[in-house]
Image (tube, rainbow, N blue to C red; front, side, top):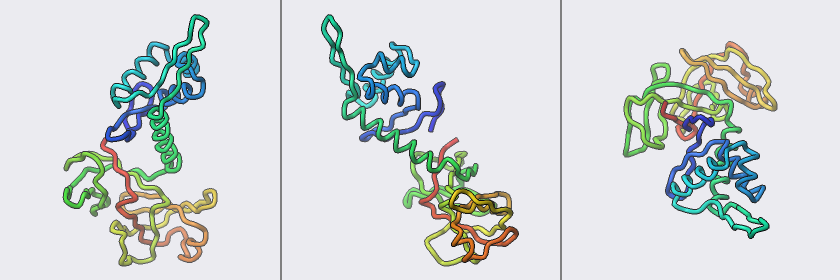
Length: 230
């Protein structure tokens, strides 16, 4: 995710390319699909018509494919613009990213530096509470990069003692609070210098007999972590 004057731009994979799209320009494409007109779509999203044409041209040059098909009308008008299959694919990719972000808009955020990179196994290590955290290496990262690590509270496991499993990132902590959050229970778990929130079912809470002040172990798989360079 990058930032622009029109808000965050999300990196979308289109064929073998990575393109950037923000909410405003996504809405422009969506309105073209809805209205059948670039002029009506640009007016609806309050984007100057010339700017809308330039954006479409730049995006088509970037992907090297047509995303909007325009059929000119006669003297009486009647022209029409519509998204091509490529344009519809870009909308689909944006909606997928937006849907994932909405599902995980309440995530744990940890800032750290990359300590080590294992190119062969495609993993990186960062420091959390003076312990190594193993992360999947997705993208172009280097040792020393400052990164933001995102962990969904639903992807964190709670254990009463460390266990042999595929979960490599395990930390000791203490429950400092718990609140009901929709159909789940939100725990705040303090792990030395960092507090993480964890979502559990009522059933899991009762089975583990969890209460504020209780010491637990929490863990999360490397594959459940997203990493962004900052």
